[in-house]
Image 1: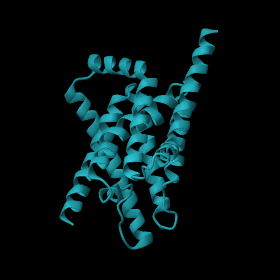
Image 2: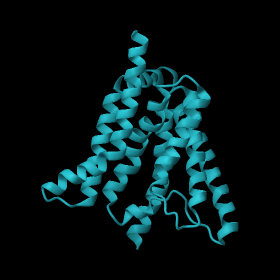
Image 3: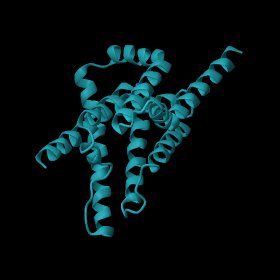
Image 4: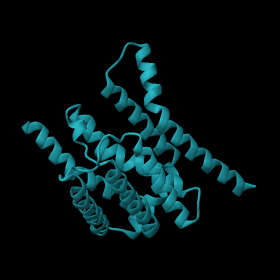
Length: 227
């Protein structure tokens, strides 16, 4: 009975988190519009902040366990080396995808770019790239899904496909690059899910995402400032 209750609670947390992820922005926008606030960046920031808080709260115990295992089994040097290894793999995959894409389009376009946020708000861009994405989205797409299945293959497939499906919503299907963006998202999510299985810890993924985002973040901010 206790096992069934735990399974039910795990499914409930996952369902709650995904529902919140889908409706959060709309709900906050509706509430703010009622009080006359129409600042889109502020609305998105508050929505993301709420989701970050809820995701950490729901998986606080799991995160503490992973953090304890991290301190016990890893040092800073080992953690950085592991993260850089997978970071290089992701960048290599993206380079290959961009190279292949250039044959079909005659041009190379940056995939999974965050450049479009630079002109909106640099502070929000920093929060989204270095805090929200590494923590909240890792909990959502890796930690939560892994908590409801013991099958490694099922976890990797479901985590990867859900990540891709969630990002399809924001794609520009009029662009000839959308299929390569899908491949890029799929490859990246597959690497992250494999990392979780391999290391049995969520924090190496968070560090890798942080490093993956900070490089284009700095470049895009500098480009935005220069422009």
